[in-house]
Length: 574
Image (cartoon, rainbow, N blue to C red; front, top):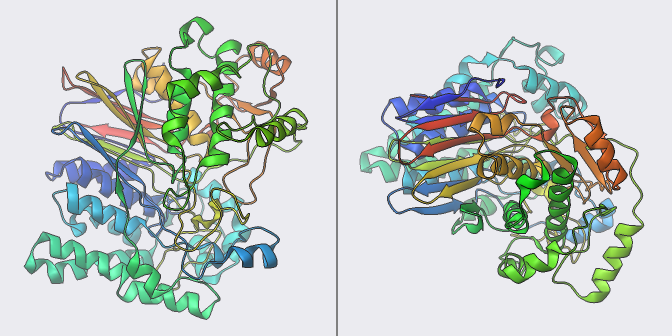
């Protein structure tokens, strides 16, 4: 029996990482909005009710399916390094690291991405879709256990800056579960954008949306960010903010049998999901036994091979030549699949493909000599997710993110400009090395699946490097094993950590495989015998991500929601 009851609808549906975000999207649907309007409302609400993991001024990569055109578009929603950024400084002053604090700041992208989605594909104004978020910030909401655990575990980080401490440790301590949590300054910041929109709306909806955006990137909020950075040794300037624009790009697409899988580009880790699906296409996974030793081993080794390519090749395509066409080609898939041994796991990260023989040999030796790490795998809890489908079949998929403990809240605003610089490398020559104007290699990556003429499914999750792994498993549960959406989300999961972590300080745990406790010990024992460094988790662990998904049956018009009980996720529809 499912931990959460299946949710079905025929008019519209939202599934998001917190029930109030789901409610926000649902309210917009009931007010006549489309999937983009509802999705943006849910995303903005996540920046309030999950502001520990999702910052209003953070990142917001978006994927939209336009049903009438049968077309998928992506909005990057990822800021770039300020013009003042210097890899040489990180190397010389910080020993090749990007330190916690103001120097991690990249240009905040989420407000631009949300408003761009509304301008191009929505029907409502910013004030309409931001109303629930403002209400939750101004009036408060009940502190939930996921946010409480996150804030408590990072209490020292919140105490580092008085502006962070005042919000997240009111009265000098983390809020208790169930207490009302208020973010007055954040409510005022969002309301300021709404007021600017209303003042300009006499010239039309477009003018109003532009004014709301300008309030953040050119007006008082921009001045507050730039002034604080100037006074405190940061690099963000008014020029950086005014020049920012999210990119609208075509998605990456691969096939997994009859399933079309869409991801964002190599400025994020999205194509890792595409590579994993490509590697597994054509393998009879059903014959391996779902979540048995053969199944987990095969998928884990495919994931390792894909992460090796991410580490070697992925970076901002405006700065780095990412050979995605070759990485997703049939010939490359056959070449890489031959490296999967049935009886033995790669002890570390395998060598990347499409490299010189000398580099490949060095990587192979490093993998073979890698020693298992003693520490447990990190828990990448930040980020959230929201999906929406309207009655026309349009779909919205977004993975907003950024935390509030590792960089300062700008006093008086209630938000931290994006600290996503933590996902760059202060290592010259690395594909995601720091450079002015360059985007870090982002972990958040919304996705979309399509069975032409039959079904569509937006899906995604929080979870750092575990995101694509959890998304792959849910996708396989649906596409290969015919599970319902909720059952596919709730099935036991596993994750490899046998590659450098995307976050500073980029830890590497050779051979580490975390497995939820509902997978039997006989299975994990066999995996250990094949060379996996197995770490058994609780039966239900937030460390295996928190997937949300919605399926729409195009023949019946019935929507089916999935929301992960490992987090605060909920689905709702009518």
